Image (cartoon, rainbow, N blue to C red):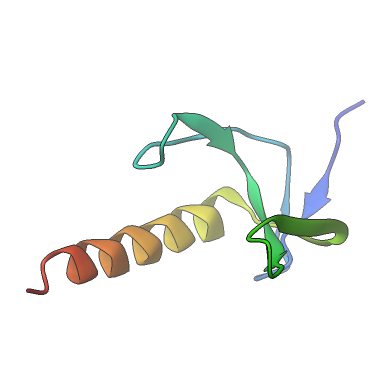
Length: 77
């Protein structure tokens, strides 16, 4: 039996996948994201209820947006 998921952005049904994410401190695989709250000590606190599932198209779109924004910030002098 396959596991089906529903994208929290577009509503599409999809099967679990892994996308290679580079550009971070360490290479990792991901297929969604979690909102994190930073506390005054700088530690991250996250909860499973803040987790968001994304289909592969929406995840690729998110990564493209993130890296485009980072590259623009890196090129500003």
